[in-house]
Length: 152
Length: 152
DNA sequence: ATTCAATGTAACTATTGACATTACAACACA
DNA sequence: TGTGTTGTAATGTCAATAGTTACATTGAAT
Image (cartoon, rainbow over the protein chains, first blue to last red):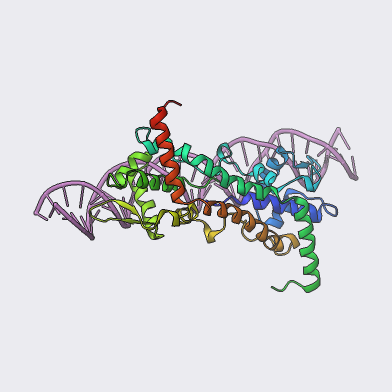
């Protein structure tokens, strides 16, 4: 299974806050248009990001801002905020392997360490990218586009 | 989303081949009992592993064996054999971001590199473990159990 | 105080993938 | 030819993703 698009959506949302936050009010409708995703889905993700303390959302008046300095928010923070992973484990085990079988009753013990290493490698890499990096790269990308046009 | 249990099932299957392959005929029914998973599911996974050239399955007479030396099969090989990931990409993007929006039309370009690094970190770690490691650790685990009993 | 644009949610739907289950044809060997 | 096994089709259940409509709540601005 792929990691759900909520994660890339959440990053997209932050890229919009970075790029348009000073000039425009970044509302769920605004974000829905940029992402081409239903506003209610956006609001649900905003709720998760807010719950994780990554953004502030203005009720009534509307608009979203980052709740912390951008270099203090990593991709891992965003990932954990929006991806609902059972018990935080990346790999799903088959339930109730046969305890009568020597392999069945020990498979968890045999695998847990190795699989955790894999998960850790991935999470460490996610943690190495911050929203400050995202902002810098987004600005660069848009500058380049402004110079050389949009042709592929 | 979690990575489906097909992966841990496939590893479980190999652990059974390692442990019981010389003494017993490892059939889909045998594996179904050890994993506590439906035999048809097991056969489907066996089909995927066979398709990837990792195992041989004996039609008619029955039974499964590794198709290559164990130190030439990595967890990544197994992962790729059984996990159906669209275009090989771990992260799912929202379709059709708005091309009218500077962020929308560049989000892929901005993120693809970073996300590929994350995926690569995970796959490199998966590639660093072989089925020979699995066999060794399984044997060790069972020896330990034989010495100290099954109490938790 | 009223207005009005937003948010926060509930309710319902569609679609997809995982996994289970029954059934049976094809197969290979004894 | 009989037996045990594989390969696979058909069907069902369940959970998660994602879309959509609807509406009460909020709070700044008029």
